[in-house]
Amino acid sequence: MNRTLIPGKTRELHSNHFDSTIWNDFDFRDDDIVVATYGKSGTTWLQQIIAQLLFDGEEDLETAEMSPWMDLRIPPKEIKLATVAAQTHRRFLKTHLPVDALVFSDKAKYIYIGRDGRDVLWSLYNHHVNANDAWYAALNDTPGLVGPPIGKPPASIERYFRDWMDQDGHPWWPFWENVLSWWAVRDLPNVYMLHFADLKKDLPGEIRRLAHYLNIPIKDEKWDDILLHCSFDYMKANATKSVPLGGAFWEGGAKTFIHKGQNGRWRDVLGQEDIAQYEARAVQELGGECARWLEVGST
Image 1 (cartoon, one colour):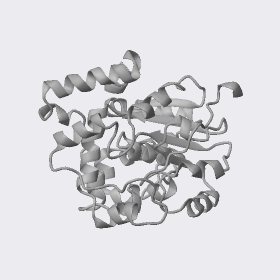
Image 2 (cartoon, helix red, strand yellow; image 1 turned 60 degrees about the vertical axis):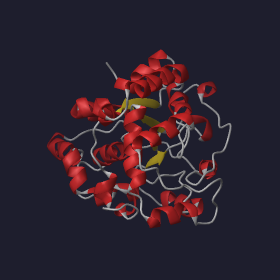
Image 3 (tube, one colour; image 1 turned 90 degrees about the horizontal axis):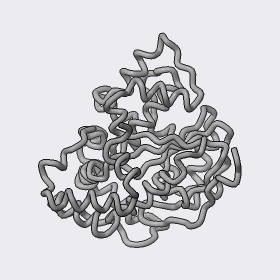
């Protein structure tokens, strides 16, 4: 790879969720995989797919433990770095950072999964409104909190959507810069752009394309198992294996975390003015090509 093309780290991000400094101390291996998303874009689904490819369709994989969210500030980075350093399998790690807050390595292969921001927001709201006291305590009452604590969501999802739009990702983190930062490096040979809608439309095809990109051979006799274990119904029924801490931070447990896996639920709630505002903002922030991809995936 031409090293002059590798993006450099220009800033650190700290919040009730983030500690981006963990990447400064991370030792990359030649075959590392980094799953990158804004959040609620199909992250857990993609992690499950990679686990199934790496472990030949094995049953009951502890995907969440195997593939930690590196830049989440809890547990402390010293614990997390030691845990991943001890892993002997091919590592597949998760980030919700924009490219310029990472240490980007030519050793790793990156997969960015995108999803229409309105669908992201609907999933975020379910995530937030069902969070329990343990979730708030972990984010707000632990050492190292930077910035304001995260508060309770409003009762109205429409209000939640408008706050997220008006305050650039509130109460989470900026949305548009996350998407655009990865779109800008999409032509690098170790970056793969994936879309939630494409997984919904052609899961077998997308899994095979991912396997090719990651140089993972698929055994014919394991193919049916891989497909089964990557299906929404299977993941919902076995959610404790793929959700962080087995879903302990959410009312209803892991099955609340893996909610509906549907797109377009906002259509029956948002008015035409809100929809038009979002679509115009997407083009303004991302440009026409990226905004179109984010809305519908590949065409």
